[in-house]
Structures are given as C-alpha cells and as structure tokens.
Length: 198
Image (cartoon, rainbow, N blue to C red; front, side, top):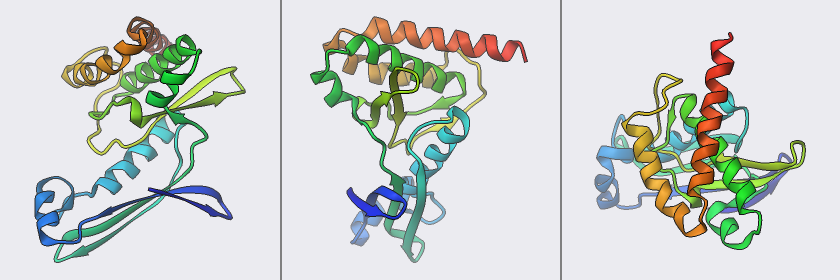
C-alpha cells in the first residue's frame, strides 16, 4: 500500500503480487485462478456498491489485473484517500468513544439493513473521520473481498451473525459493545420505517 499525489488529489495504491506459480496456485480457488475475480476486483466492486447504496465511503478510482495463462500475477486497486483513521487505532486514543460507538453501530446497522454482508468486519478495516456537516463521525469500510449482497431489510441471518461474532470481541476491550449494538438496532429500525412508508 502506498500513497500517491495526483491532479485528482491523494490516492491510495494497493498492490497484490503473485510472482511465482506456487503463489498463484495457493490462491487459485479464491482470488487468483482463471475465471475468478481477484481480491482487488472484489474490493473495488464492494466500494462501488457501498458508494451507490450508502452514498458515502472510500471512492474507488480503478482496478487493474495482469494474468498469465489465466492465473493472476498482479492486481492493483486505486482509491481516493479517505480523510480518517482505522478504528482500532482511533478507539485506543480518543476520549470520544461513545460518539464513535454510535457512529459505528449506525453504519453497521445500515450496512446490514441494505443487504450487505461483509465477512471481514474488523476494526482495522473500518475508517472514521470527522463529519463536520453533521457534527459527528463518518465511518467507511475497506477491504471487503468476501462480501455478498442479499435481500435488504433482514434483521438477522447467519451472515449477519458471523459479522457480529467477528466484530464484537474487538469492541469488548473498549467497553462499547452495548452502545454499538443499540445504535445498529436503531439504524435498522430507521431503515424499516423509511421503506415501509414508500
């Protein structure tokens, strides 16, 4: 991962290299084999979906792949830089944990209500930055190669349970599990009311 300055602003360039056949075969059934979408492509698709449905988050610029005999040798994902920090770092330092917990819960609740199942819901992959317009925090998700989308509106299913089972232990050291879950439930209720009236 590296930062690049351009006329379009600051960009993040994330590169996946598979220089040997051993590397390519190791990931062939997941992201590097013929006919398989690369990890970079899956991440790009997830970011596009999040921008389209939640109207916020990291803006993807492009994705590029190089293949040999159908096997991936290199993939590059380019995004605009999000003006924020990873939540695992931020929660360890800030005194605004309650505000961050509410923003995080609201984000995850909206994510699930819209039908997005992440499969990689880690604090290090959740970025937070000040939302000056709303006087709160903006949360966004990166690194979602295992995501899938299902019918919106469900409050619970096995994929939602897996997302929470992965995230909850990471929240416990900060004492914010309850606040995050309450905010997520409220966000889901808001989604339900909004779509019931349409």
